[in-house]
Length: 184
Image 1 (cartoon, rainbow, N blue to C red):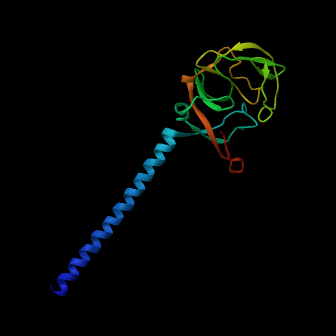
Image 2 (image 1 turned 120 degrees about the vertical axis):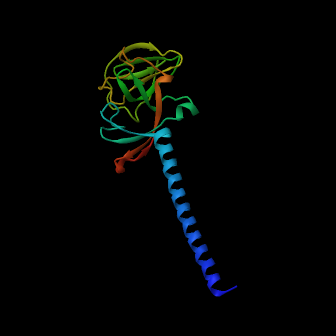
């Protein structure tokens, strides 16, 4: 075979390999974008905290990631911080009462079935009284950590939150960077 013919064949192969590498990189970038889109638009939803009802755990202006698929994996538990919907919008609160329990507030302290709930790790404001409330089956009783901000299950218009209205469970605080935290 002549030297010119070998050179042409080699240059053609080099061009083909170069194009294949470009297509490979483009494919990798597109797959990465698709996976990130799936993660952030289907599984983990970024949310900005807009009020102080969950202070000091979550303060206004902080960014959190809400796990939208968690409610399908396991039933939310007491102490979980959940995102739920009402007729007035989306809200973030902590679950304190489970289905079938009786929840009562006495001098700001929570009693579950007449047993005091230890909230020393998250609640700072103990205000108000509330007569005993039975949590219906398929629902949870939610309260904000800052009890002075009262848009939670204490209001008759909100009441106990049915599981169907729970949009997800908060998993991670991502901003500000100095307060990054994982919520289990």
